[in-house]
Length: 160
Image 1 (cartoon, rainbow, N blue to C red):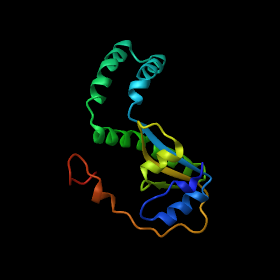
Image 2: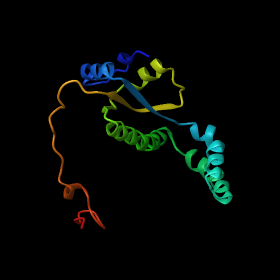
Image 3: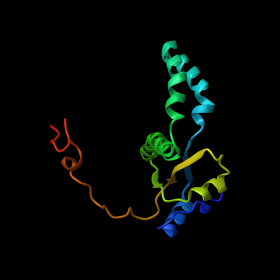
Image 4: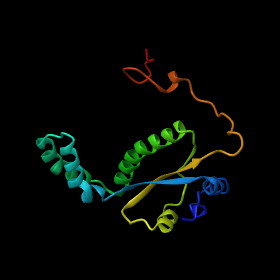
């Protein structure tokens, strides 16, 4: 695949450079129809892992009832959450293994679909360039103190 075809909006020149120079670019997608296609397989795997039959039977009904009620925007939001859980772990593991990562979310959905020939039901959530950085890291932009964003018991109450 031509990595340089996975273009970002905005900071496009840097994004193209980052994608073109990396050893790998992971395209993290969610399939809006995956639950329809894979529910039986997922439940079968769950049963092998000790899932009680009563739980599997409940999921057989509750999963379709829940997910089929989503409109497009709700499904894309749900897919973003689910995919980003895995994406974050991939990013952290790559760093642990000594690689540098560059997450990208400003890409053009239709271009990624076109380049990879993805099914229409796939929603591209993010791209993750993985490789070794050339040159120094960018400047440290700083972080809020934990007390600014993390609370205990209720909003605004300091975490003890």
